[in-house]
Length: 431
Ligand code: EPZ
Image (cartoon, rainbow, N blue to C red; front, top):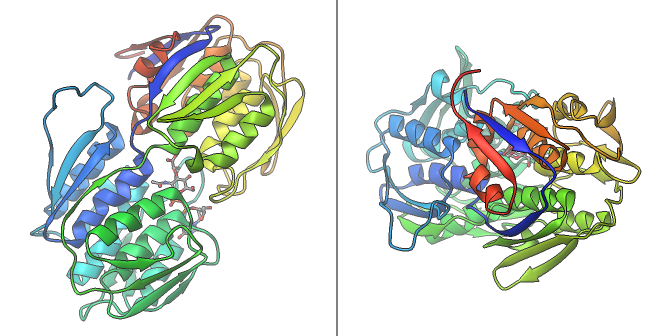
């Protein structure tokens, strides 16, 4: 298993190209199951989750290929991938594949909408909480699917096709909204999704579906209306920039100090997090092609946050923000309201000398003057990058083990940080 070695204490200075968003690319790839025509996705990040989803789609019969390199492309230019689901040969998504990546459960929606049946393994819990799929199944039922649970599989059937209906989510769910959208676009009649997730990745999926011929209004608000159509066609779509990667590097700069241009991203994708960073003392400005983050030597001011659905402070930046607060000039309170068990990074941050007390969904972080490098263990995707941020600001050397978590969601992390002056290297192999 690879590990990453970081020698902390360097300011970050330079430019970091922001990749396409993993959490947009995954549902967009799944949406290719809705049509027999080719869907071409540009700016797809090179990540292990994307490769895994290509295998899963391949199992259903989707012909997936990655375009070759073009002149001027660099290692961090995203891939262009072509997906063609002209013949869906299998409507079952087996446990071995779904259990490795929760988002793959979402294939249930396009499969039942287009093929009239789907058999998808229940994903089970994961490191950040129980993460049930009851609301996703409720949405499909509201559109006329009959759902059975059989041998650990969710079996959805709609032999005569889905019918438009009203879906009212009792809590905001990103996956539930993606699922409802992908099912409703091919349902007969009108569907209304109430309390829909407003995340930019939902808007990106809706934009792509509209290009494929879907009739959707209200994406980006909490009420989405879909007029079903008989079939969808192919399209070409560029994946939006990754707001979590953007916020992660912004926090790294806020932590180490320095001056970095985050290229190819947009502030409106993460305004709540940028506002919080400004309160901590970072200087943020918008450029023609991205965001510039600077911090001088005045120290980090403590700020309290609560994670919320978009447009609030994202849960996927909570761990990174906690890393930043470990060196604040005072005490901050971080409340996690989306997932019940998303504090595994606390114990690992403590290994750098951080002082954090947990009380249910609240973490109280007492800033310390210095962090000291340590060997630490990545536990999930966002937790692991919070350890990278702490290591960049810690005195001396740190080693982060189990970096396969990082490879699921951060493209070329060592290269991007190394180009800005960080001392960071990947060490391959056992230990
Ligand atoms: C998406 O997960 C993201 N994943 C997550 O990012 C992100 O943390 C999350 O949205 C919240 O923003 C992808 O986009 C691939 P939810 P998702 O359904 O859709 C509960 C990362 O690191 N719930 O919005 O699975 C659920 O347990 C990942 O990139 C139900 O109770 O999240 C949670 O408490 C981690 N029943 C809340 O809703 C359901 O049927 C929100 O979850 C579904 C969800």
